[in-house]
Amino acid sequence: MLSAEITKVVSETITAKTAHSPHVATLEEYKKLHASSIDDPESFFRRGYLNASVNCVDRWALKHPEQESDEPGQHVHISYGDMLKQVCMLANVLKSFGVKKGDIVAIYLPMVPEAVYAMLACARIGAIHSFVFAGFSAEALRDRISDANCALVITADQGCRGGKRTPLKKITDKAVAECPSVKNVLVLHRPYCPPEIMYAEDPLFILYMSGSTGKPKGVLHTTAGHLLGAALTADVGWITGHSYTVWGPLVIGSTTLVFESILTYPNPGRYWQMVETHKLTQFYTAPTAIRALRRPGDKHITSHDLNSLRVLGSVGEPINPEAWHWYNDVIGNGKCPIVDTYWQTEAGSIMISPLPGAVLTKPGSATVPFFGFEPKLLDPTTDKELEAKKGESIEGVLYMKTPWPSMARTIYGDHKRYLETYMALYPGYYITGDGAEKDSDDYIWIKGRVDDVINVSGHRLSTAEIESALIAHPRVAESTVIGMSDDVTGQAIFAYVVLKDDSAHAPVAYIHQDDASHADLVKKLSHDLVIQVRSHIGPFASPKRVVFVPYLPKTRSGKIMRRILRKIANGEVGASSDEEIGKLGDLSTLADPSIVATLIRKVHNL
Ligand code: WT7
Image (cartoon, rainbow, N blue to C red; front, side, top):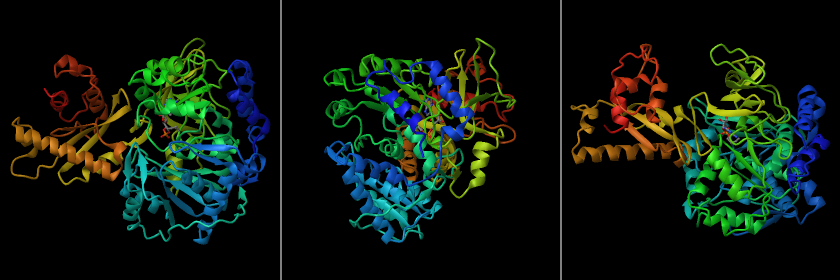
């Protein structure tokens, strides 16, 4: 299934004891290999029949049954041999409940070994897993279960993160009460389970994510393509996200670490303690975590031995140079290549990234395309492909020339939406939704989303989903949610809220008087709205700021001018003087331009 030679080259390059003796030593060599992945993808990426759980477990269980996968905290060590038993047991349980090839199983578990067994057990019998992040609320879980018509849900009694307990079973009970498709609860059995033979294109899993409209999208990935993508990239650490902690590292037979707690519990040295205890070689995290880890001071780091580290990865958002240098100097001690990996849930594996040792890095740039990817920049107004003149840089919307092995094949139950979202904008090309610059060295710099998606600590959130949660509150008439930049989380949620005029005195005028009881009312209402969003979506979607405004800036045709709200929320306009308002650009399409000064006053508490 894998092009063995390429897998070997890539994994040995990345895991080379030092970055000084890589297998792909130069950018020239890398470019040659990359060109063959574009020119002759059929022989670069082969296909066939397989079973993902056999590729990830049996192969290694036979070869070195004692090798460990680590689960820290209580330091549970799991060998591949043990893992095979666990996976088989659970796979048999699923079968005994009638789960078969092609069925969808919802997994609502924290980062525990059982989460890994559950994913592999599904793969073993050809079922598709839909992993629902354990931070999601009952409503969010319900929507995801019913969209995919799941007949079985795997969950835990409770999750435990940073000393806090989440009653996952209770939440699941609440969710499944409204899901008639769900029929079963689990029991574990022991014997060996023969793997289902799967075709390369059979689905492996769906993973729900927020789109720019409210309805969650179940992005569907296939068996061989996903494994191949993950295998080629897994050595830069465990691939991000719940699914990628599993497939990539296991398919190449390496050791992975599953971590249930949070990075600051019981103290900010938690990660570094783990690096020291488990002699971790690859460490992969998001810039938001890097910034949070940098805050408490270097004393939490220097007390630990980080010499085992060889490669440091970053993913999820552009990494700012301060964080990059700190990561490089303090964590990597100047000797670990920083691998800034750009990709997305739909891509299934890394799209743009340096291959350590072969590609020199520039802080803040994800550098050059990975095997199988051919990025193109298009002009956002004319949709024309941009061509750089020698020595010049270009900036536009980032597209990929399709296809590549690990790309999502559909949005579950809505193939039309898949085609419209990713393929229709420029036929023959896949749109990433990100803006990017290609500099004069052909290095790519990701600039962030060009659609209405907010990225909070690496969680992709749709403005529409949060707005609908806010509007569900009985006092809210309308709301617009914006991403404001935040030192730690990258972006944070800023909500503009218009209240209903449902009392004798307009509540807006009413809550803006300054006596204390009205200030209290504003506070209480903001608090209620935050709770509202937490219960509809999850705590990570909580607005950081709620500002009540009399109405929203709209064009005469009724379209909300988000650009104005974005600039004001991000402090780009400091006062309501004409000169400051001028910074907002052309306001001539606004139905009532006087709203701008009001918005500035509200946001700046003037
Ligand atoms: C979006 C995808 C799959 C990784 C976790 C997030 C942003 C991702 C980078 C990077 C700049 C990045 C993009 C992308 N993004 N990696 N290295 N540099 N931006 O997955 O939730 O599907 O989000 O995250 O905006 O489109 P996701």
